[in-house]
Length: 383
Image 1 (cartoon, rainbow, N blue to C red):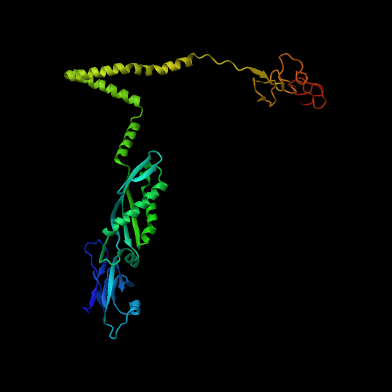
Image 2: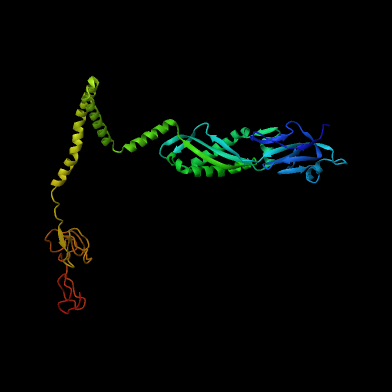
């Protein structure tokens, strides 16, 4: 049996270790009464015979049967209480590991509402820490002597890309909307990663999306589209550029630019000669379009008919008078059955009724009155 160890602790000058095992290989002879020093950002998990026994938090701990009750159950403590026993101690670093950069190795296929199918690359950073020491050791560390952040970062980045892809497909419609929803994408992806990290005793502290961009060739097409929109009317832009070229050519000719300037001036002049007829035609087009409109004859007046109830003039074809609400008879129609008859017919060819509309009768005395009469001429009753 080796010399019993009386002080157990773990120091990490690099700051990259998530877990360190004491001893790094095999197991150690720990003496009952030995001191275990755990820093503020650490916790210590005791293992004996491949099984986790107890977990110590920050502070200085003396190994006794009082603070290791589980240890007392699994081993027999000889008389004297200072007999060494074999065990391993895993020190877990609970600090927040920051500035962990993540990014897509391959572009993510994304169905865009405007650009159809486009591939996206995403970049950002995150921070995480270990919350459940025993769960972390049992699921990820195993029996390794040391376990650093670099050894787990690739695995965690794979989880990130999977959840980010899922969130983008469900909540984002176009790449043109991405810049305004980076915070929402980060918060949504972080929420989806919570359960994934918890399975290994870990937690995501921060998740930030720095950029989500399409491939370079797609970005160039977007820039071209933006440039076209910035130019506005393409015809006006081309006219401006042509006039500017003529001005530059004329300045070159005044300065004695030689044959090159003369050739340029001739080329521009020839181009303008070919463009001028089209430009003049465009300039004359509005005037030509306005001329027929000015010479158009005045519209024919709409024929009017008289309402038989109130004698108001209403447009022909009106079915009900807008003044009194009475029905306007169709010319040549029978007042009783509505059948069409020849002009001048005195009786309906369909029902035999008189074509002349009957005069209205007084509701009190029954005397016939002329259409439009408001009071009976016999008894003075209101019609």
